[in-house]
Length: 138
Image (cartoon, rainbow, N blue to C red; front, side, top):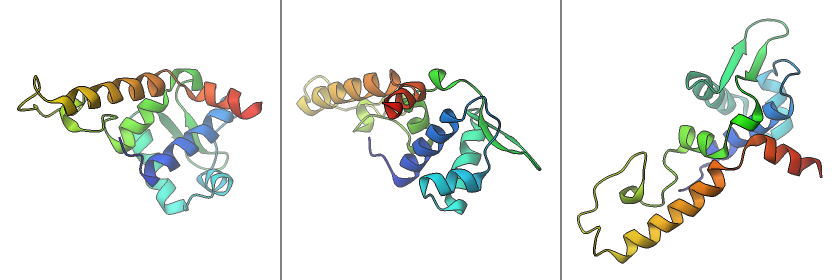
């Protein structure tokens, strides 16, 4: 897994939205200012997250973006997979976009990368934005 700048910005934007969950929608400009994200880039990210059902938007005055589900139901893994793709370091060990390893049974690299994938996925799938918000408040 390689977390791109786009992936990092998506995580940061969802974190801001999760911190404001239940308080109404946030304008793109507010999120961009708080996290120092270029507005045009953030627009693309938020639209992608909206298309996949993570966010909803409300047009007009008092409008903006908000989470569809509570922060405790959205994992970091979900957002990373939407924006950056599989968590696996090599596609041959990916559960979401695999390619068949021609020498899976004899490849030592395969086994190591599969363990890396499992550990990474375990952490990211079991960490929600509510968890991160709790850590930020301490």
